[in-house]
Image 1 (cartoon, helix red, strand yellow):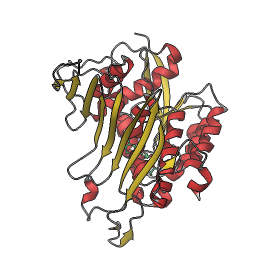
Image 2 (cartoon, rainbow, N blue to C red; image 1 turned 90 degrees about the horizontal axis):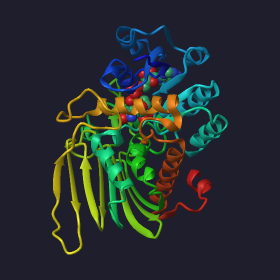
Image 3 (cartoon, rainbow, N blue to C red; image 1 turned 180 degrees about the vertical axis):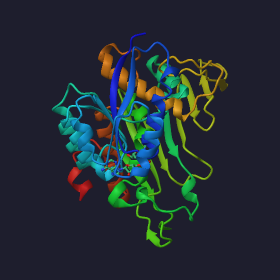
Amino acid sequence: MNKRIVKFGVIGCGLMGREFASAVNRWGHLLNLGFSPQIVGVCDPNSNATEWFEDNIHSLKLVTHDYHELLKDKEIEAIYCAVPHHLHEQLYIDIINSKKHLLGEKPFGIDLKANQKILNVIEKHPDLVVRASSEFPFFPGGQIISKWIQEERFGKILNVEAGLLHSSDLDPNKKINWKRKIDFNGQYGCMGDLGLHVLHMPLRFGWIPKNVRAILSNIITKRTNDDGLMEECETWDNVTLLCEVEKEINSFPMVLNMKRIAPGHANTWYLTIHGTDFSCEYSTKQPKQIHFMEYRLGGNQSWQTMDVPYQSAYDSITGSIFEFGFSDSILQMWAAFIDEIVNRETMAQSFTCASPQEVSISHEVFTAALCSHLTGETVDLSKERESTWIG
Ligand SMILES: NC(=O)c1ccc[n+]([C@@H]2O[C@H](COP(=O)([O-])OP(=O)(O)OC[C@H]3O[C@@H](n4cnc5c(N)ncnc54)[C@H](O)[C@@H]3O)[C@@H](O)[C@H]2O)c1
């Protein structure tokens, strides 16, 4: 098949930069796509970080310490950017102004103000596809739930719970990194890090929190740095948000958990939806299994467990009996991003990556959560509270 090649630059060659780039080398995994990405340029001020790309990405032509070099390159059509949060505002704005499509990492700006500045620039470039990275909905369990929502199976929603749970920070000897410092990660702490993953699907279903009561915890307040010295660990480790959602005539509670210290959980993303007609529970802890219960008037209340087939948004060579994993979700998300660049509204399937509007609502929720924790009150998201939140 003669495929349309979309040339990419990668800015930020750390953990996530490498994860994305390795997906290119697996592109043949996906079936029936008329497009293919090619990474031609990478940028990171740290030469150790770019070395892996030079060894593994054979289409690479440009390796630089200065991202402006990538933005000047006419060949590059789109950028994947994965840098610490304090850099999002400047870099994302420069990328969009250089007229390149952007798949940017969350939280898309270190705070609400930074996010709004990015949004203002996006609005001036409606021709560009700008999306935020959020791969978990591409797990087959996420895709099935999305289909069930579209089919309106749930009846009246009773309650929703969603979360992303990490646990490596339970170890007090784990060294400090930029994600534990306000200057680099922002006041949001773990909400900036984990929050969009938790909110992406609820927001996609139109479940926009009307208000929020938040409890934030900073549990381990000091960690050693690379020189063996103790440093202040400033950011929130764990956050629980209780939100009220109003959808049409239905109002229900939605609990959102973002935790860096959830004992035993290494990257567990979960979504529970209980409804009057249908309920489901899915967690990447057991990624093959989805639990669901259909209720018919007067009938038994009997939960079923199904092994979900290996089927995400895009078809692949993998047999349906095999297991789906994190790197598969990245591959699928990238396919959705490029499909949108190439095919726009005629893309092969309808589940797009997280939109700037969804990201913007996530910032409003996180900012309200900071305010709620500070005051101990429930914050009404429908009112303009921005100045209080930021102050
Ligand atoms: N989608 C996910 O599942 C997921 C997981 C982890 C992190 N993230 C997000 O990815 C982003 C990066 O996180 P990470 O874990 O990859 O961090 P990381 O520290 O591993 O990598 C960040 C890289 O950015 C580089 N960098 C710093 N300044 C730069 C500049 N001016 N130009 C180019 N590169 C620069 C650093 O040298 C480093 O190599 C963050 O926004 C984070 O929230 C997403």
